[in-house]
Length: 194
Image 1 (cartoon, rainbow, N blue to C red):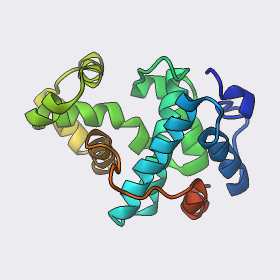
Image 2: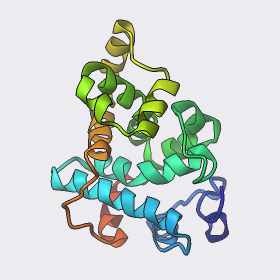
Image 3: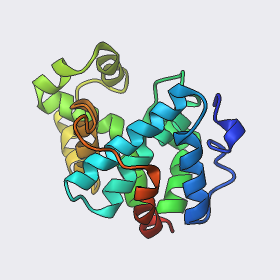
């Protein structure tokens, strides 16, 4: 991954084991000298602010906060742009999430590409309102779901959380919300970090 390895973010082998280490990791990305990297972390705070504004449970706030950084890790670099649930697993990002935050948060993040497929299948306006790049991602990650795929997804424990994050992203992640600094989210991280 480009640009943020020099600040310690993205080196999954050096798992943060405390709230302080997690804060340093998130703050390093949020204040990174590369604007494309710091924007990812700003978007992460926007998503988490959306979760807080809807009085969501702690696990959903943390999943929203970590989604964008984990997307970057799973794609291998910021420029790669694409990621799938498979790349989340293949890069070790999923295992790191499970070890650090538990399966619920890891699954909510892993299900994002699948949630987009589900929403694109059941809500035609959802797909038509996606930008061309997002439409291509939906189609390249399996396209529209069959009836059995919809049923399987609907029975997954974290499917509702995954769909909430997908809907926040696609309606403009907290466009009108005041976005708190990263330290605001540390109590959520503290309660979730295993």
